[in-house]
Length: 186
Image 1 (cartoon, one colour):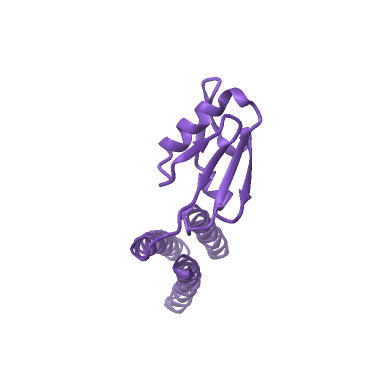
Image 2 (image 1 turned 90 degrees about the vertical axis):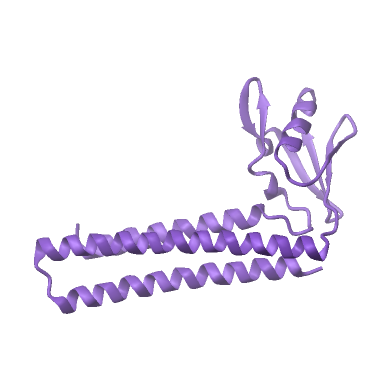
């Protein structure tokens, strides 16, 4: 393995970590209706756990309500069960045709609690990025031994790894800051 391969694989892994962070942030509730919050909800459909958004049309009504209209009306009860089991903090309301999820306005305490969750998710992401840095450094040490690289070359490459790590940690912090601002906006 060459130094360039190490950097490209490290960059790719850190990029994937940021993509995962964005997915986690989408699932965090902000007081506005967002269909992406349903991405993790699975409905038993003919014995197979199936993503809710594949089985129904989801639309936003008046900014605070999600309307879920299953394509197959016979699974309405299963959709309700899945939503209750998903623990979204919202009680599903069914009228026999569609299921409505009404997002109540968040209290200031709830907003602060959600901000703590945002910080925790961000910190977990930064830990993952640091673990990738450690793996890259270990790979670099293996190359150093096998190819007898000079100390200056090794030091330069370690600096590059650190700059790459700092870049992605900064991105994670910026995303967390944006999400916190979004959560605290009334």
